[in-house]
Length: 514
Image (tube, rainbow, N blue to C red):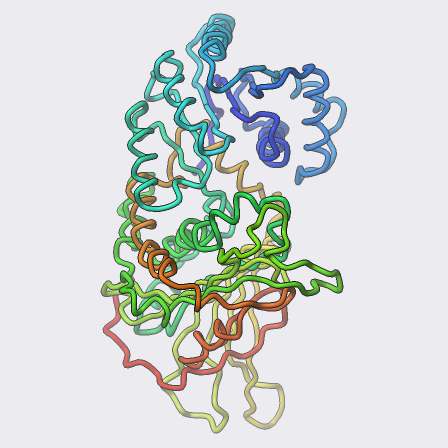
């Protein structure tokens, strides 16, 4: 969609001196500003409980921009203009005085700008602060205009189904659902957004997007990093909660959803929710057949020694928290019945890589003596942004010899336009009031409902928790999970290797109209 200039906006970041604001939020707002997407009238307030000189605060934010911004170091002129819109606001999230003073500040801007500006309240805080902030914003009437005032909530959205429902109940008690933007930055990534254009604007692919033509789908997010200083949080979360329940399931929704009736937020969100609701629920006995969990031990990544998970700071010495998960899921609807979706994620893996692999079925034509390789479509989300199609081609010469080759589309080679960071796209959508790329309460709860049987099964035993050395691709059982059906995991960046054909091809289902 075409972006228009957002209306005048007050932007309030609770946790404005935190790591997220420093690395992601302020650099994103800065890039929106220098590319002329920010409102003509706006102010950004970073709220922090400790006193801090405003010049020092701005200097700190500039360091973040110069270190993490995709556009590189800010010029003096750019920073001078942008920094005039950025302010430090000292305040305790739990004290009434904070909100009284904040309200006066926002009202003063409205008076100066001669209009009631929209208000964006970003919760870049620990989960325990969500309740006091929400209650205070509500009681002080700071987010009372439904069409203008928005609340942005970072994950985690609860740590199980019960707490997710409680969080949604809290938020909707104080704000309308249309005001609440639950942010999952993976939905803001350019390649993930491009999936809708790829599927629904190109008729050549959509008729093949079903169980008659597709053998299986892989969604993999590999992280080379360890838990590092996040051990305290991660040990209470784990890979299933931290990655599968939100990031990978959201990607799965975009891959598997039906075409919405129209391009608008609620129609698109309805289509994504339906996918989650139709994921086959696990019974306890099925969990250990379809889900593999692992925990990294000491090893080496690119020749650098990495300590084991249980030796990380703030991690229990007998922790059973998983740092790796591989799962086989099924969607029980007409389009996807019988097609396995393999989801995999882990920390301390050899490479940083996020890919979607669409593995097509074997060709029914046995015209050539050589066994042909099934077609495969790979959408690389990071580090490279590209789409590759693997297909058979004749090798030049007088003989009919075939070889699998690749057809590539890359953002780098195809576009001169810069690719925005995920937070840029998402924050601009919030400023414009577009909730398309954000999760609704029902989607959050549906996702939790699907992973709860796994969490409950894991509570009963830790015998299935496997170890893997840092710098490897996880437990061998994860390979067995996908190899049982004749498949192999695929990761980029690496040369494409022909995928193994399925040992026992499934019987084709009736095709679903694209």
